[in-house]
Image (cartoon, rainbow, N blue to C red; front, side, top):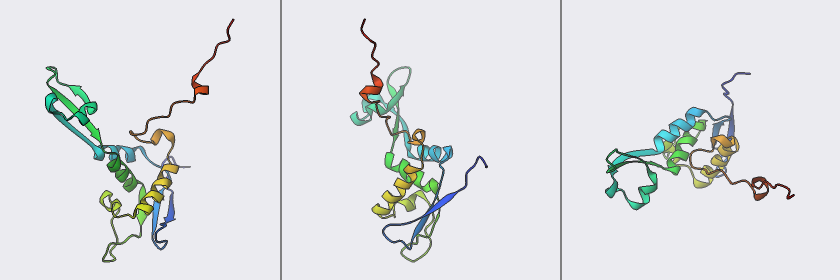
Length: 152
């Protein structure tokens, strides 16, 4: 069995089953890299000019302490980029009945119900370690996190 998996599954869209999307059955590390790069904004700014909502995105400061590097990630853009990476082909068309290219911009044209349907398919095929940079791991249950020692 080859290391690089090339399988894809065709899914008919719930809003109109005549349209289908083929999703790769397996994600690749490059999918996440492309999505992360496209959804990350980095900028350097004077610390006194950084907005309050951006303060927790400051990841580094200059030696003089006056400027900071701000790194923000846009979750929606990450998801849009990741979906475009996982789609192999589709038969979706534009308003002139011309084939739509599979691009991140085309993801914006999906009906919300179809987006959600495809996203569930993508998420179902991803191992936990591929959940992306935005998902906090859940805390273990109290039974798992508590270690009890018998009292003497």
